[in-house]
Image (cartoon, rainbow, N blue to C red; front, side, top):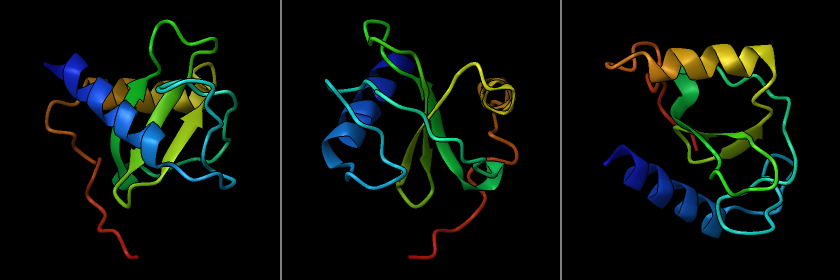
Length: 102
């Protein structure tokens, strides 16, 4: 079920992302061509997932509470730590606690 939810979220993300400075370039749905070096605070993180296994480059895709998406280098120490905390926190303690101010 989690895999299906991740796939749906990644598909929606790729279909709705804009070509701004924080949006990744995509050669195909669910894949990232570049990385962003922005440290996203845990409170602003709504969801985190790895790109699909058949993507040319692996990345962590972060979706914020405001719906912005970031492709982050999975080898970056900060990203590894955040992703591990997100995966191991069943209550998502510290994540998704910030409200979006649009």
